[in-house]
Length: 242
Image (cartoon, rainbow, N blue to C red):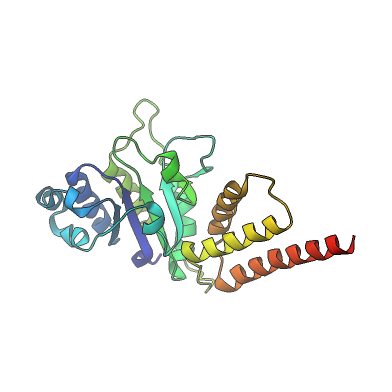
């Protein structure tokens, strides 16, 4: 596991002390990259540092973004942590299942983001849609809600404890690059009349979710694009011959 490639993303956290406790949980497990969806000026610097203690350097180096999509653009995967199963939500993985994928991707120079929602509301459906996989931490049904820093600690610990002996040597593409492949697929499907009036956005979300779990290399992404482009070309040629 290359922990330098693990990115912790906090989406709209409210409590400054929680951010400090998250920094400490990260440092306990040798994870140092923190990104926050929100504005730095909305947090009380003193309160953050009270709980961060010697891990305040993580807060000092934290980056701030306007959305999860922006915060994870250079990552190969964005794992949204949630305990709710909704109609459009992912099949949720356990932390150890996700760690196995993260191990492979991080060792091959791919950044892996773990996204945590607001303390009160968690990740909304809109925010979950910006992630590519879902992870859930089992807890008692009588009191299922975890403190933000506790959830971060559990996920970071699982990543910290995961080791990998065989490395495939493939560098996964970033989500930003993956979106270009997804757009190419959608364009090809549009050409052959796959979409009637609606459905393009849902299809793009489907391919983004599936392909991100595959950790495509640049060569593989190009091949996927080529297959769909060629299929669209064959379809147009057949239509002209009829």
